[in-house]
Amino acid sequence: MIVKHHNQVVRSPDTVNASNWRSVRLLKAADGMGFSLHETTIFAGTETPIWYKHHLEAVYCIGGEGEVELADGTRHPIGNGTLYALDQHDRHILRAFSDMRMICVFTPALQGDETHGADGSYPAPAGSS
Ligand code: 9YT
Image (cartoon, rainbow, N blue to C red; front, top):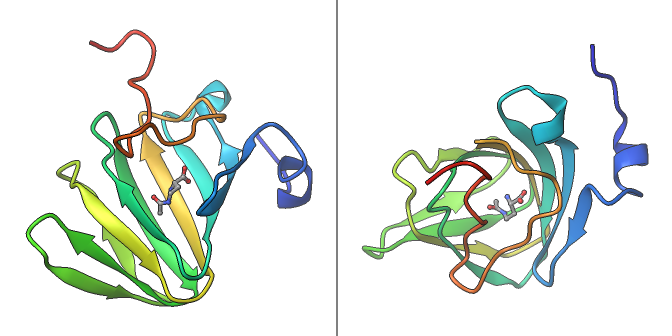
């Protein structure tokens, strides 16, 4: 069994502080679960282009307000209780109107220290083509 507490992970290299967000990688690839699980805060007033070409991500909002905009211009409001799943590697823009607290699950799992590249993606996992 794996047991961790947010308090220890937030002070470790498994927490990534980006300009628009902070992600606490509570479970990562080395934990061997086949997915990673993060608590992410999206900072109020930010707009982040994202495109997870190499991963699927599910995002569950547990606080705050914002919206996600898809490439075709469709916008979905996000608030406490909203789930969105990027099942098509959907390119999107994430906007936070207040600090948003998100529980994020990635497959394949992240190593733990990734931050977005210029196109809003994370690198392909080692060993994948
Ligand atoms: C919701 C979202 O995609 N935020 C960007 C950070 C990412 N979820 C992560 O690495 O936790």
